[in-house]
Length: 187
Ligand SMILES: [Zn+2]
Image 1 (cartoon, rainbow, N blue to C red):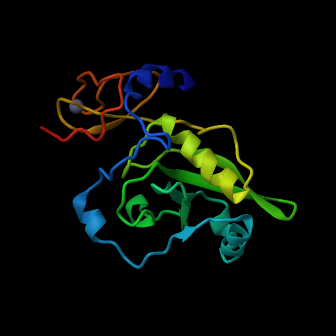
Image 2: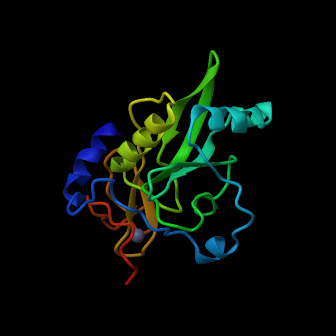
């Protein structure tokens, strides 16, 4: 699964230094259903600790929703929150799920994925996550695990998760491209 990322190196054309901005691509009604903003901006270990201390114990066992905004800040929301709500409806540098574990006094990120069907970010969005965590002084792993490979089917427009380099649509069995193509407007 890790080797799939090789297939999308061609997508890295004109990228600003901060990385690609991913627009929201999920259902429109979900974006409109935006409720009270519940996300916090994780600017430091202390901010993270204060927020996690307020979580129920069983909630800590499951991953939280995160996004990285255009300014490079990590936004964190309760588990199962919609990414579009976590991001305030805006485009993101990264999105996914993150799990924390307490390491002595400090909390550290122990598992991060780019699993967000609202933004479908490429695995190449990882540096934005690492930079946001580094800036807040939070230890983290070396990359997404798993790194999810999203593709839009040019035939039926379904968004697929590519597994084992099987670049075919799960709905219509048509081919899906090797390059990240999620933000291309449906024709
Ligand atoms: Zn299809």
